[in-house]
Image (cartoon, rainbow, N blue to C red):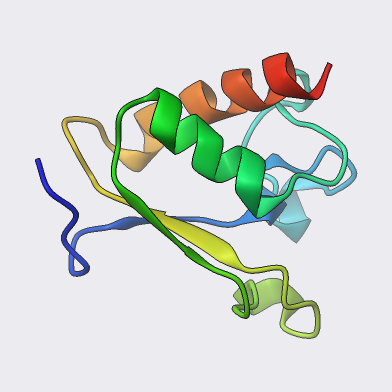
Amino acid sequence: MAYDEDTAIVLWPEYFDIDRTRGEGRRLPKKLCVKEPDLDIIAKGAMILDLEYIVFENKAYPANWAAKRGCVRVERGKMSKTELLPKIGEILVKNKK
C-alpha cells in the first residue's frame, strides 16, 4: 500500500518517551519506551516494518505545544495504530541498547 496523506498514522516522540506519564502522552508500557526518542529512530522503525513515511521536523505535539520535537507520518498499511505502536516500541528498545 502506498503512502496516503489522508489516512497516514501520526507517530509523535511523546508516545515512546519513558519519562512521560500516560496523561502526558505516553501510549505504551514503559518496557516498550525509551529515554528521549528521536525522529530518526522512529522513522527507522517504520522502515524496518517496510512502511512508507514522511518526517516532519518542526511540528509540536498538541499537549506539548511549546516543544517542537516533530513527528513521523506513516502509511496505514494493513495494521491499525494500536497494532503499530507496540511494534515500533519494540524496535526502539532494541536499537537504543
